[in-house]
View (tube, rainbow, N blue to C red):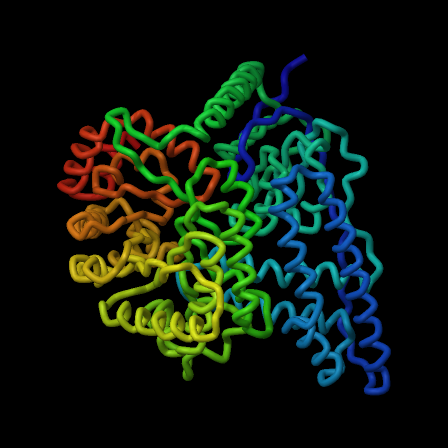
Length: 585
């Protein structure tokens, strides 16, 4: 009998590792939404229908949250805050307020009100400009995910379930929502494939927490994968093979064995120093975007948090978090790090991002180019109360452990001086009130993410306690190219020598001033670029926790003299392609 023809597909790699197994297709019951107008007299009854659906939705999410206890501890820590965010949105949020307003004032039936308000809010989020495209996609997805749950409960339509999924199967679906991901048990599936979706979504975050090989956004795979079709999925490369040949199966089994050995080797590196062969020590830290990532940092071997993005505590709120709320959240994170340093970046926000509680702080009329407008430290200095509340919370949380304060989007020395003056005012105010704080004020450093800051690095280094280079924005501003715009995709490249010269200039100024300099952009997590960064003068790298073991392994294989030679060659290279050739990429 002739072997079926092997077929290959490619998507976005999300969950690491390789899986071999039969395909199981999970279809979602179709959701029908009716649009109709209601009479004024029917508004109370329609509002009651909505309230019942909201109560059912909250109950279901509560049950999902309780089920997390059956998952590994790190998965629980990753998934619980996401479910909490959904529960919050089912309460007194802008979404629910808008839905009720459409019923009461627009006389829309509940289904139409949910659908129309969701489209309006998700569309407004996606219409924002700026470099944080992935963040806008996630926030729009949150709104749509809650709407899907409300609509199904309004219509009493069933949700997708995986009760018939045979252990060892590879789950294939057109798309999976976060609510679906919360129902999947890691011991149920060998791997997961979807035709739609991306690696930056909340679904991806939840699937990644399950620890199974996952590939999202592989078009055409659903049509080609009949139930029971043998398949190979590679969660590292994003490759999918249907009806694999004997040779492909043998190669997959070999890679599974190699992956197992590599994971054991990386695990053994956790307590070893990040040190080159000629004994140059590099400090590896982790970036933290949401608190649920803390367990991953603890497992990674990172020494502290090099970038705590404080925006998480302002999201999905109708009101700003007050000083006590911010203090509690910072204290929990600092205490969890058990004496390892935590670098908190002040609120990095502008009109290119959507945070409901901060909408009243937006410039009016709207800025024509938000990426170059009032964002980062510029916004905070324009609203001193916003700045001083956050500074006070950090100072109070500093009593729980070592903390540093980092300023985003700095261009001028005057901005650093203004923040230092505000920090002094808040420090003395808290001392007069007898509030517990650390014995000394925390170090005040800056992000180097504008060309002006890099070019003024010698002057800034005389006043800042440390530098942290944000290569994502620095590349965008240096090359005048938004990485999220397809037309500019070939121009945006952090390996362009022009960008590398700014990195080198910054590191040199920090070294001359005897202050630490770290790099916390995406480059930090790419181990093939590590020798170049070390050669440019960077001695601290901050990245997502999962990358720390790989980068540490690369560092321990390097000779620092070779790194210096690589950097010299890259700085003299004509373009990014030549730099990649130097790095063997």
